[in-house]
Length: 597
Ligand code: PEP
Ligand code: MG
Image 1 (tube, rainbow, N blue to C red):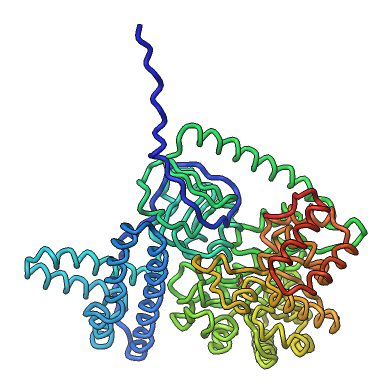
Image 2 (cartoon, protein in one colour; image 1 turned 135 degrees about the vertical axis):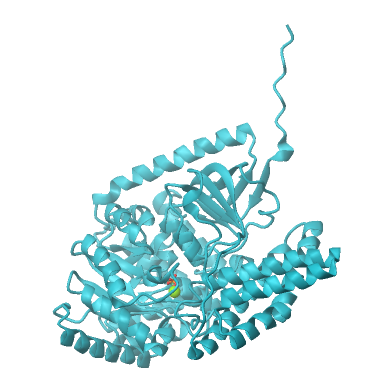
């Protein structure tokens, strides 16, 4: 009998790609290509006073699309030459079209003259262009029509903020592969259905990455060549700890990764046993660990993590994936559930931080896509309706449990004063209405996340009830590095002496003014940085619930006096590489190399 030799493994089929490790863990499953699908849009007529805002909303959608295409162009340049050239031509055509084509001009004109919503105007304009091209019966034009449709769909998606596909219909255990996932798209992922995801675009500290961590999803982003290399249904591995994606893995690679996954899950289970132990250093300093929350469904994991309250509730979730702004009652209903479930533990509610890479369209398109634009507290102050509704909901939630109000992207004491005034106005209105609010006004704190705010921290500390240092934006703005752009991700470094000096200055200003100061950027959740942050005087850290046990483990192995001494040495340095070395050596001596992501 002839024995059939086992088929040799075809190594060429296996495609290994590298990207940024943003959500630890390993996902293995069938690949689902999260591609652009047509979006059905309603058509409605606008009252005359809505026409100008609608044109502006369309202009914002075009601006967002230009940014998206620009980032795809940068990514395409990193591909092998043939792919780079091919994709480059296509993206250049999209770019030109968005810069000013019949499509863009035609849509704007339709909104102005026919007074219809922007989404419907895009679809009608595309149909018109299609009809005129078809009449010419030209193969070249027929091909251009596909490009026009692609650009049109991108605009409609930006306008409606529609995720590319409903994720709930995916087969269980799917691994999502996409060009880009917005934070709002990511918020719709159900970890019981989606095993993990990988994207071409995005930076490690982007809100999409933060959302992936909070959902406990293995994720790799910034993976060049990802879309070109894959076919739907193929087996794919996303190694969110190492920043690797393997498409069509061989049997031996698969076996290897199954072992790694089992190891990872075992480690996580072991850490969860720390839940009931206090976060106390070897020399007896008690540290407060709180949780950052992006979505209400995280409250369960927060309670299980051993976190002592919510140090940062990103309220953007209340504004995501919905056509209109939520009113005060809707916001109150959402906050009420959260505050009640936290059962007496403090909930720090940050007012809407729209703009930049998250929710640029919140507030009906008035938010800015620019990280330096009309966003966060600036947007809220420019829209008293928006601010008052949010403050009203928070003040009412204050009757149900301890809450604090946190303002994003504050740069001046004047902003804080304006919000206090608004709180007074809203309190009076609520009392007139007979609404129940807390006995005392909630403490009002500021994010220290703009270099100017950090440098003026001594003045801000006189006006604020507490500080929360946001190192994600503080690093972005201090080093002028877009946190959502994978092309500059290698330059994003919170250990830069400039960032550390700002953290130190703000912390000392808060301690001098005797107001609480916490740190809630992604640094807080990485045990590599714990010794340095405590050494700088921080005693409150807020992080994704998943990271609480790891940071607690580090704290329990840490000698605070030694950490403070090492922080002093570090603060005398001017070179980030030397700082990293001094920190890593200290961690290695204390933990035998276990600290770090
Ligand atoms: C920060 O900037 O560090 C922060 C915590 O806020 P966000 O990540 O939501 O911008
Ligand atoms: Mg921020």
